[in-house]
Amino acid sequence: MKSFPECMETYKKLMNKGEIQVAYSGLMEFILGLRNHLKNSHPKFYVSGNFYQGYMDFTYFSFTPNSLKKHRLRVAIIFVHKTLEFKVCLGGLNKKAQAIYWEKFIEKGWNKYEIPKSIKGSDFIIESTITTEPDFSNPKDLTNQLEKGILKFAKDVELYISKL
Image (cartoon, rainbow, N blue to C red; front, side, top):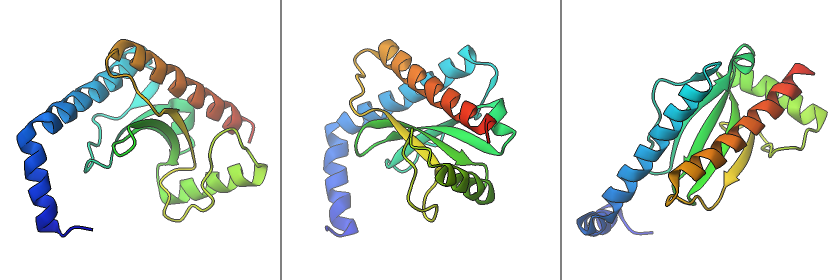
């Protein structure tokens, strides 16, 4: 692996090309637009006031049905920069809530979505990849695809939690 100063030289070269800035700016605009669309279209969901831009590792915001928020749970919409994937995850509002519900999912053997083998070092209880190849050339269709996947995930989790 290159040293930090060597990486900064590469960073400078890439920044001077100008493509990184355009891609990053467009991505942040898309994610903010997705967040606003979900907030306006689904007023019964809690949507975080802003989103976490991250360190070019991942970017996310919360979009949680009130029924899950009552259980100290949250749904996060995550963009993974390295793979260009959109994921939706269920997490706890704190580590205690996360551990309690992770154990419930493990005990019941729920396998509809991916469950990490251990809660240590994990920020989620379950996760699902919505798309591995987002088509940014058609933001409206991408928004609809993501919304459909997010709502299905939230509904599946709400139904499961209601039966616990």
